[in-house]
Image (cartoon, rainbow, N blue to C red; front, side, top):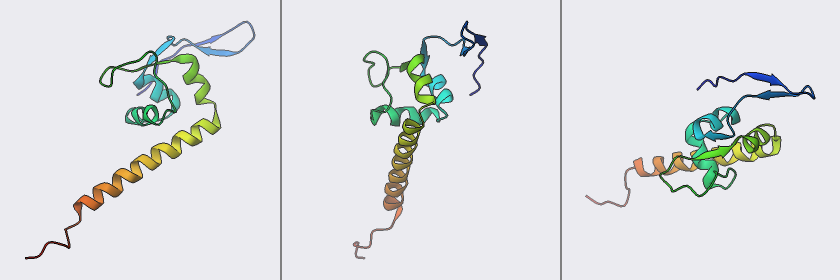
Amino acid sequence: MRIRKSIVYSDEGKVRTNLPARLNAETAAAILGFALHDIQILCRAKLLTPLGRPAANAPKYFARVEIEQLAIDIEWLNRASIETSKYWRRKRETSKESQLPDADIER
């Protein structure tokens, strides 16, 4: 997804983007550099916290301030990358195990 944002310079000369204060999961994923499906993994690992207490099947929204801070935090990005890698590695391993023929079955 491509995010359209306009750049605004504040009085201190800092670059700020014109994004809403509450970001949906798709926008948060794009800013953080993760895929949309990785946001659920990060929430489950408690590395990312949605606003309010959304139901499991409800859309998740995130605070822009928090997302911007996390996007520049190298340690958090490292932990988040490790967590998503672990999740997908486990998922691949369990999928491979379920595809193996059962050696215990006698014919």
